[in-house]
Amino acid sequence: MAKEQAIKKKTEKSSRQTLSAQLVLPEKTLELPIIVGTENEKAVDISKLRSETSYITLDNGFMNTGACRSAITYIDGEKGILRYRGIPIEQLAGNATFVEVAYLLIYGKLPNKDELALARKLLSRHAMIHEDMKRFFDGYPAAAHPMAILSSMICSLSSYYPETLDLSHPEDVNLTIIRLISKVRTIAAFSYKKSIGQPFVYQQDKLSYCANFLNMMFSIPTREYLIDQDVVDALNLLLILHADHEQNCSTSTVRLAGSSQANLYASISAGICALWGPLHGGANEAVIRMLQQISDEGGNCKKFVALAKDKQSKFRLMGFGHRVYKNYDPRAAVLKKSAKKILSKMGKNDPLLMLAQELEEIALKDSYFIEKKLYPNVDFYSGIIYRAIGIPSSMFTVMFALGRLPGWIAQWKEMVGDPDSKLGRPRQIYIGEKERPFVPLEKRR
Image (cartoon, rainbow, N blue to C red; front, side, top):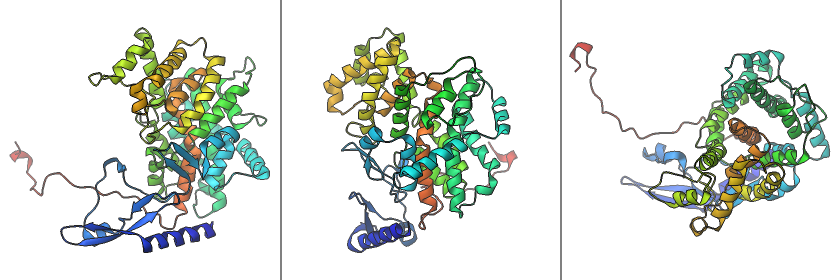
């Protein structure tokens, strides 16, 4: 790791020495270094802008602002490229397990046989939560959203393991990482069981990560739950495809919270709350609501495709297009094959899933969508696959969090290990009242 940091510093120093930009201000002209990434991404380094000029940049939503240097995930939205640690998502999705991908994101390499066996052993060992924590579930109303439960329970874990919160001890950090990845599926499954009034189901050491989660979700004491390997494979694929996606809203939240040296549990809890927002993690749930609307109004997909193209209409076709990808979402391309397999096996009697297939077929042939590159995205396919395998829409965002957890951890770990990392503190342009005097109550109008 020290060698990698040295090479990284040397490369950055070389880039600063050879490339720069000029910013012409009314008072002065400033030379700004240009930073170049390994994939030739370029950034203008403005870190000294305010100290040398008193100016700041204004960038609502941070759409053009790089907050960090990262070696974890690379995205090229124009070309439809997504790579974890340099490995194309298509190769990982077709060959790796979720546990392998989690290891890759967090530790920078795919595990060998011994490392994978140890990781699996530790995940089984740490899957249970403290028995006292089960009582927490009794305090939530039956209608509590699973994301509310998940975020608070994850944060609560820190109170059970205070001795491992010291960031200066790598072995404690690694133990916390294992505990989080293992226990999050238990907490997620327990929150679902709580919502439907069924007893909690414990993990089984003989089962894989994804199979264990499905068993904890759907098995009941009165009869055996038969684990379908196709469903396990579909879940494994979904989690891999959601494992990281660069500096999105929830990942940036994890980094911002972690920049204060908040512990990993608290930082992840903050990320879960950010993911809960419908503009971020709720897109696949919105796909199902849209399909239900189409069904309720007669099931005419062509009518709603026409409405989506009508600028006067407020109807939006959910699950098509992407803020980052201006080409086909590479995750959607992978999921499409899995969706076809799962739907042919498990979705035949579900009218909403049949509507989804019809809608996809119409949109992919429509010139409007083709010209604007509004292809089905990962949320379209993930929503219909989750529904097909029996996961209710209220759990969709929880499933997103389950998959995104390794990416959050990797980003947090990279940040706390970066000697250049600083406490996050964005600036603002104040547009309020100028200085004015206080008015006593009796004189106010």
